[in-house]
Image 1 (cartoon, rainbow, N blue to C red):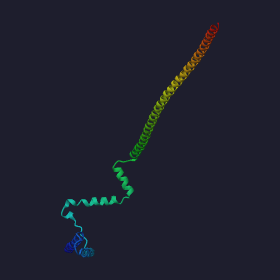
Image 2: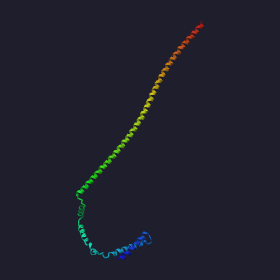
Image 3: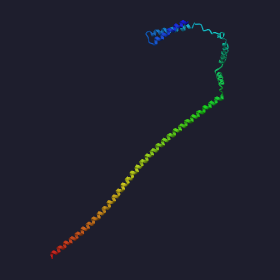
Image 4: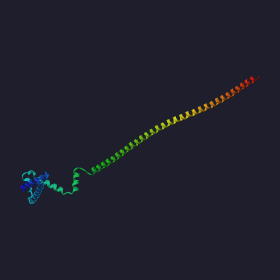
Length: 208
């Protein structure tokens, strides 16, 4: 049977090699290889089972190992729950330790929740500070705009006052001019009278 296994394995390897390298006839070689492997598995069913050798006859120090195997078999008859209890007992894991572990996990969860709240509060504070900074910038812009408007209003007021003063001065000049024109008219009238009297006097002297 050992020779059959060796020959069959060689054919299987050749079939796989042909298929991997895409050589001509790879499909046929793969069929032959898999068929050979099937035949090997078929004949292996008729092979006699391997006999267990009592090595304690050759090595006496191995004689006590059978008892350990029996002890393990006895332990293996326990239910999974019993085996788990035994493992916990051997590891010295009791209810108090499990309760303490649960309490620790609870405290850890609460601490994580508080940390999240702190982070959220910090984020809210930062957002509030940003809003305050924006409001301050807007206030500065409004103040600058108000100052410009105030300066413009002052200039407009000064211009209006200068115009009023100019108009008042013009009105006074007009009145003064009217008075001077009236005085000039009176002087001209008086001069005409004097001139007329002189002409009259000259005319009367010539007649005599």
